[in-house]
Length: 331
Image (tube, rainbow, N blue to C red; front, side, top):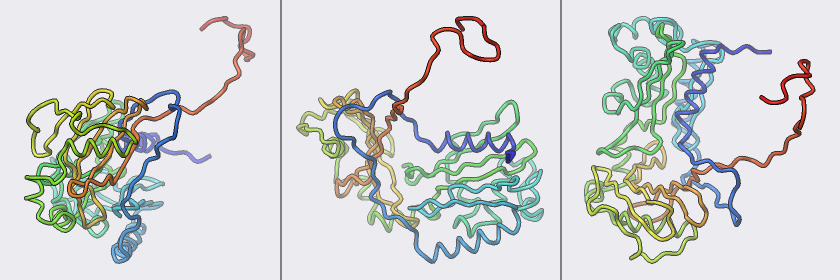
C-alpha cells in the first residue's frame, strides 16, 4: 500500500476545502425536474498557450520527481501543482523547483518567499511573476497549529471587483518547503477586461442590465414567474465598486445577494457580470447565477445546495456482534 505523508494529505484537504464553494446541505432533493449546473464558456485553451505549458511542465518535471500539473479546462491556468513523491522545494525555499539564486532575491524575512521564488522561476507556466501578488488581496494567511503548515490564499480583482474563482493558493511547511500551489489567476486582467468588455469604464458606471433586471433574469432561468415591479431593493443605494445590493421578491426565500464580478471567458477575455445568489422558495435550493451586464444572458448556474444520496443500513437492535461482545447495550 502506498504511504502518503500526513502533511501532504493535510495540504490536499485544505486546498479542497478552500476551492470548494460554500453550500447549503439537505437530505432529499425536492420533487420535480432537477435543474442541472451549466457553464456556457468554451472548453479548451488556445493551442499556442497549451504548447507553452507543455514545455514548462516538461522542464519542471526534470527537477521535481513525480510532478503533476492539472490545468483548468476553461481558463487554462495551472490549478493544481504537486509533487507526488515530495514537495516542490527543499527547506528555506531552496532546492528542486527553486534555485538558490532565485530564492536569494527575496529576503529571509519575506513570509511568501517560497511562493514568490517559484512564480519567478516558472513564469512561463503562469504567464506572470510574483509582481501579480502585489495587486491581489490576501484573503487568508493561517498556520496549522499541530504541524506548522502555512496556507495563504490570494484573491484577484480588477477595478475593485473580484475576478470569478480567481484564487492563488500556496502551502508551505514551517521549514519553508513549498508543498503545492494552485493558481486560477488571469495573467493580464486589465487587458483581458478591455478585450472582453470594451469601454469597460462606461459600462461599470452604467451597466446596461440593472441589478434588479439580473435578479429577474436569474428567476426566469430557474423557471420562476415574477413581475419585475415585485423585485424590491432592500437598500436604496448600492455598496462599493462591486455595486452590491440586496433584493426581495415573492419567489425568494430570504434576500437575493447581487454584485458585479469579472467572469474569465478564457485566459485573455473577461466579461462583466452580475453575480446573483438566491434561494428559491418553491424549490428550497440555493443557486449562484452569473448574468452578463450587457446582454442579460445567464452564463453560469451553480446549485449551491447539496443533497445526501439515498442509502440504507443494516443495524443491530441489541448487542453488536464484535470481538468485544457482549458489551454495553447503549453508547
